[in-house]
Image (cartoon, rainbow, N blue to C red; front, side):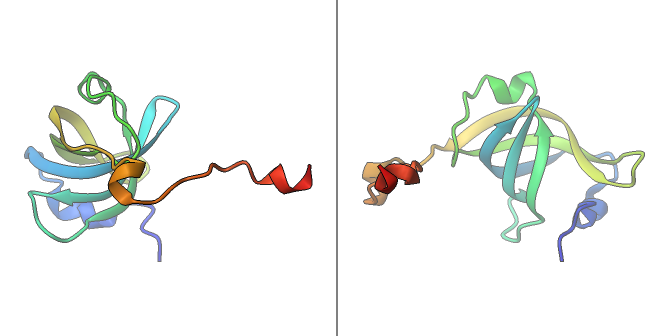
Length: 117
């Protein structure tokens, strides 16, 4: 079941700043899509995928797909009943995205119409 309201963040919605870790997937308008959000360096993933506002703290990191970041933020419940991560600060990149050389996998691309020509 998909947790569209991020209810697993509810225990952290007490107004205290916590340390979050997440992997950047892609930018989306004025937000960034992140995956595998964890809280306070715990091993368990709290949210599989979340959209966070691309604040100055995130923009300065020049994020690429696969970059893992760590930042401080608070959890709040919005008017729609969703739990969100807000006011991120002290953002830092703790590991960079793997390149083709790192993984040993050669990527051809996503242009699949080549065989029709």
